[in-house]
Structure formats: structure tokens, C-alpha cells
Length: 304
Image (cartoon, rainbow, N blue to C red):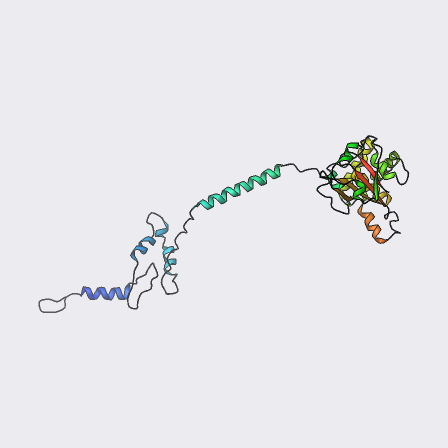
């Protein structure tokens, strides 16, 4: 500015502004941008989004402002605030997956609520068998009732035809001890005497069994046979007999469709002893063949 004599009397505002902005002020971008050399590009819309909210105290916190100002990016520009993550959309696939998860959880809950089956006796009946029993085996293998003649007319080959004339059925008395009559036939023992010996052996040797369920099954079988002379013997009594006499027993029966099947009913200790030689199990070579009618009676199969 000058007076009438063109003498400087004041200061030049534009020159002062440029000098002040150049030396005293700096421009901080809230959003990092890439721009050609010599130019500055400002995203005004983005800057407005990231401005602090005057309604909250955090927007006026000097410490937060200093921290943001002193955290430059790789290009020397202050890093912007990270936007909040967007929540995923709930889709029809999510709905179906949730429904399947609820169904599985309900099925598991129902399964846990089902009381476990007591399989101790059933497991002991199948214990020590050399072969896994077939699913076609008769459901109950106790026997003691009188045999019926109608059973011999079932479909399928006769016993003699099946065994090619080598074995035939010898009928046992149905007085409740038919199993013990059949097991003692070759030695001439009465069914009642052999029954008492097996009961005693079950009671005295149950603890020698490896599995706790088998121990309990042996004890239960001895109590069952002891409690009533009319109670029929079953698989557990057969297994105990084979160990007591070190002798093999094979069980044969006819399926509903007429086929004749065979299953080993020998204690595993007898099989192991037989493999060591005749001196370990001298009776193991002698096999007793039992015929079961599939319901309630045992007979003996003898060589012809």
C-alpha cells in the first residue's frame, strides 16, 4: 500500500497471506491419494465421512488427534480410520443349515435319553466262540422241552443228507435236562449229575474269565440253573462244559428257509490248548455235535 506520494505506508495482504501459508501452515489429508507430481487431490466426500462426530467426546480428544497426525502411511500421509465391517446377509442356505443343525441336535438328545440295553447275558452267551455267530442263528438257545415230530418236516435237506450220511439225530429226553443229556451221552453221565457239575464249575471258575461281563454271566447262569431243576441250560452252560472237559462242541440248527448252519461253541482256552498239541488238550480231537431245533430242545448228532 502507498500514499499519495507513492511511498509505502502499509503491508501487502496477498504477499503476507502467501508468506504465512508457506511458513506457518501445513495441509494434512485424511485420505491417502495418488496424484501426479505437483498436484494435490482431495476426496471431499471421504473426508466428510471421517470427520469426528461433534456429539461424542472422542471427536474432541486432543490425544487422539495427535496420535492420528503422528501415524503416517508408507507415502507419508496419515492413515484413515478403518470402516466398520459389514454384517453378512442371512440367506436361505443359512436357514436350511440351521434347520439341519437343530435336527441333528434333537436326534442326539433323543439317543442320549434312550436307556442302554443290558447286554451282559447276551455277550456272555457268545463269548469264547471261535467263530462269530451268524445273524441267522436262533434268537433263544435254551432247551429242555420235549421234541416235536412236526419239526422234522421242515423244508430243506434232512440231517442225514446234509451230513452225507455221516451223522444222524439221536433224540434226547425233554425233561428240562436235554442239553445235559446230550453233553453226557458219550461218557454215560446222567443229565442231572452233569448239570450239577456244570453249576459248580460255573460258580467256582467265573472269576477266571477275562471280561467282567462274562464273569457276571457265568455267575448268573449258575444261579439260574441252581434255582429250579426245570430251568433249561443254554450257551453259557455249553461254553463252561467245553472248558471243564477240554472238549469241542459244534452246534447245528436249521434256519427258517431250510438251510442247516453250524457254529463253534468251544471256549477259546480249549482252542489255544489244542494248538499246542494233544498233550495239552487230549479231548480236543473229540467233537460233540449238538442239534438245536431252533426253539426249545437239544438233541445229539451221532456218527452213523
